[in-house]
Amino acid sequence: MPTTAEITYTDLREHAAVRAWRELRPRQAEPERVEILQEVNKSAVYRLEGVGLGGSAVIAKRCQSAIAAIERTVYEEILPSLPITALHYYGFIVEDDKFCWLFLEDAGRDRFSPFVDEHRVLAARWLGLMHTSAARVAAATRLPDRGPGHYLEHLRSGRRTILRNLTNPLLHADDVALLQTVVAQCDVLELHWSEIEKSCDGMPSTLVHGDFRPKNVYVRTSEFGTALFPLDWETAGWGIPAADLAPARRLHPIPPFDIIVYRSIVQECWSRLDIAAIQRLAIVGKIFRWLAAIHWASLGLAYEYIEKPMARLRSYQAVLAEIIRATQWVI
Image (cartoon, rainbow, N blue to C red; front, side, top):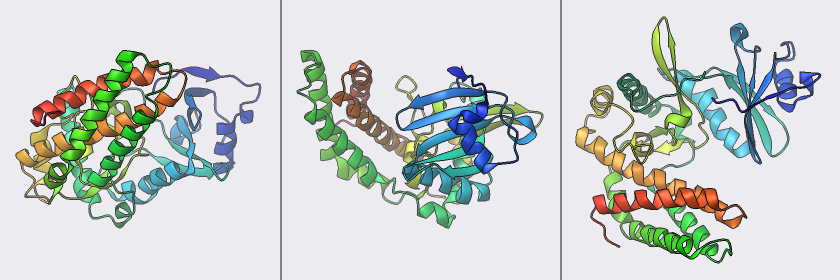
């Protein structure tokens, strides 16, 4: 995780993350230092140096209780029973009726890259084992639905938000034109949604990470080899594994894992999931991913600083155009 700043206090026990950690582990020494990894309105992430197992760092994550509930279920009830590598989970602390703290092992600083063959093989094995083994874990079925209906709601919510903000005076004429194009693209995808649902028929349901991309996946090399450690399970749920199999970047059109290796892992449990079916899932997952991204980016149109959401939506519009052309759907 990238470090943005270091917190300096006369007494580090004054910091909220340290207070929460000491509530969880009252006999633990205070950290050597606290580093800010992320601070936004509804969440914050800090690195507490030297307080974890063997003097390692601990990641303190402050988030909304609803989001924390999903991650807690994954870390407490699902991952421990799966034959995959996972970050050590130290526990959680309730801050108030809206926020919680989660404490996790530090994943390190080396991120997964879909351009490294070894990483692609690791991702294929990790995803294959997670998808097949989690399908038999009862706790995973209680997670939020991540089927086609979930992403159709992303489409509709994103479109509503864009239409509601077309009158923002900060938008230029070309901005409005681009947003209208995105709305038209969403209309096309919704018109063909029954075809998307048909592509999902008969596909297995399981635990879905939902945001499996380099930003959220780290690798660690030791004397035992290189291992994969995904984090940020806040979008996790129960559904077909399409989103996890999709390309995470526009400029990297192939899935971020070795399809042949993934197939070799899942074939024992999912014999009908051949290479062609996996490729279809990846295409559907690409649609799912970008519709979710459009929804989240559209929320920024209501505020004064629209440069970032417009830059993202401009990129996402180009992705949707590629998807529609590839599927031969015409606006």
